[in-house]
Length: 102
Image (cartoon, rainbow, N blue to C red; front, top):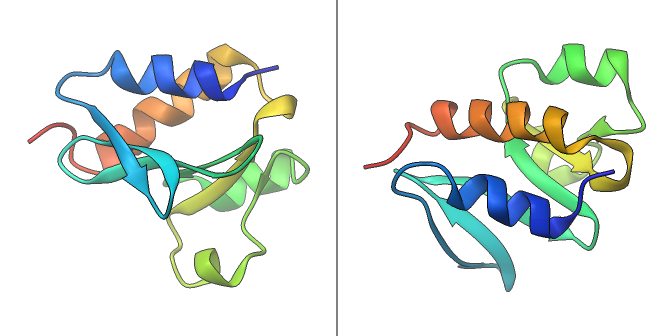
């Protein structure tokens, strides 16, 4: 089970990442926004594998929120259902998709 503190630690360990609020939630920026707490226990990340992740584990990876429907790279992740190790992989992918650090 991952936590919001895990998200923070994993994001800030990447080169050039800063944390600042986005829509009154903690968010992490490299070149652009790549991770944000959506609501308690849920993080928004970018992935090139949204459909595959959802097909494998729809209780963990989802996007049935109107804000995310039109953005095929965005996925919501329930932290209570993912290991820190798996979260690290998705965080790193999100960082790469967002262009890394500026």
